[in-house]
Amino acid sequence: MAESPRELMNDIKSTGRQAVDTGKNLYGEAKSELKSQLSDKRSELRSEWNDRFETIKHKAQDAYETSEDFVKDHPIATVLGAAAVGFVAGMISRRRH
Image 1 (cartoon, rainbow, N blue to C red):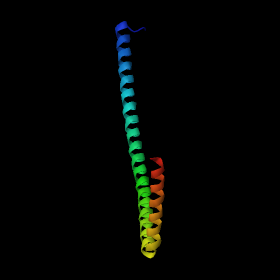
Image 2 (cartoon, helix red, strand yellow):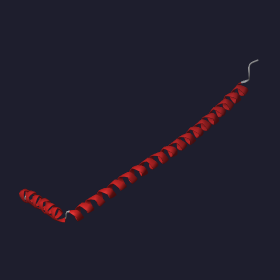
Image 3 (spheres, rainbow, N blue to C red):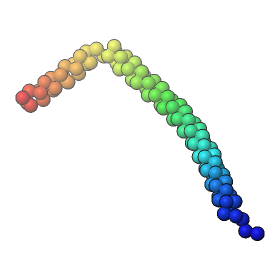
Image 4 (cartoon, one colour):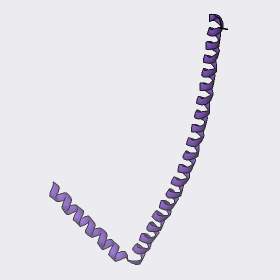
């Protein structure tokens, strides 16, 4: 038998509420999953960049120590090289003015 308009309206409202609740639940689950994935990716990237930073830091430290050893082993060549660079820089600067 056909439902009354009131019963039909109540069924429509009930179905609408269920749809809204389902949508809210799906949104909450998707939001939670996305937050979890972003957190995991952030941790992964942070770890990767920390590893790269440490590698660069060690290479820079090795380069500094190597150049320090070179200066200690060849002081005259170092001073002459610095003087030559200063002379060339002065000549270039003088031309521009």
